[in-house]
Image 1 (cartoon, rainbow over the protein chains, first blue to last red):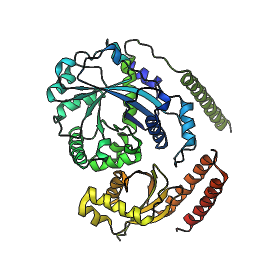
Image 2: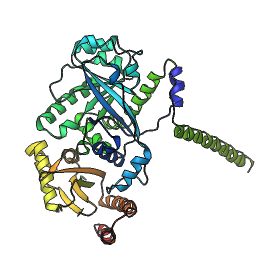
Image 3: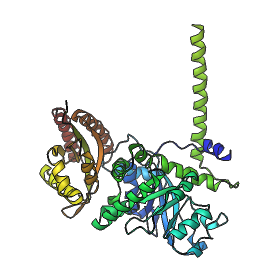
Length: 303
Length: 147
């Protein structure tokens, strides 16, 4: 029952989102021209949610690895958006929400027991993703660990293991999603072949459910709009409904899953004041709508 | 009765430096090369019957492509994979796909009016403003005559 109540409070509308963006820039945030150009091309492509990722490979986390993520303010992005001269779908500027994310690449089983609720370093990130490198680790993650959102696959070399249907059914019941990264396939010919072969294997194994497309890009050149990704999904073997869901519904479910996981044991989340004001304005709108409907009904009866 | 059906793509391209002007024959050649890279001789043969460029404009960077309905997936995916043109970085984005050319042109006109209102708010020297407005009015008339 707790999950249903929380889902009613955190209502997320249907929005497009891209949950994997790289940036290795250290220094002044406002001079990071690569990231800013990427974000503005995302706004023009109709994206609403974005997550910026940091990668760790086979390490135990120390307190210096806590997230140093700060979101850009909407006024700063609106200035840059007005200066660009490209054609867009929208009339006005729409808000772009930014989240922080961590991906852990694991190939040795002694780094698994650090993924638990009490780990304060992991609590500072919004979304957690794991990249397993062998079948033994995949089984350990199924049975022991409970504190993650996404499982990613590296499709550019030979796949390390082939997942089976019985194990994937367990993960689908738990609302965990599988992710495919597409940005390196746009450059190289060899990587394109490996991407198409391994991505179609995974789509076959999961029967097309619970799949997310996301780009692993640093540059605005290697980034594509969600309208194009739907046609990529159709050539890989998804159906039309599933291809639309993989860009529209599934990433917003990931964000819901992440907020519910963080707030489970009574940790309070802070809300921005602008969100609280918009939420209360929506409440008043709904009340007025209900009152107007009642007035119309009574007028129809008495006429 | 079995009719021959077409699909029309409305697209936009953009590049880093806007000094190079792109001609219709050059773009068509590049698209056929990328189809040959990704889908081989088989793909080229299937799509080349009705692959044609209907309209292109270099100031607002819009063009309209025609392809047959059976092989629209091949053309769409190979448009996604294009990255370079003559050594310069280059990027194509698709704004819409429809069965008649009339709907494409209505959408193009609507997007162009929004674009001009946004661009004219910035500070631009007056010569550029006049050139943009002239071009905008010309495209509105050319698009109506495409039917």
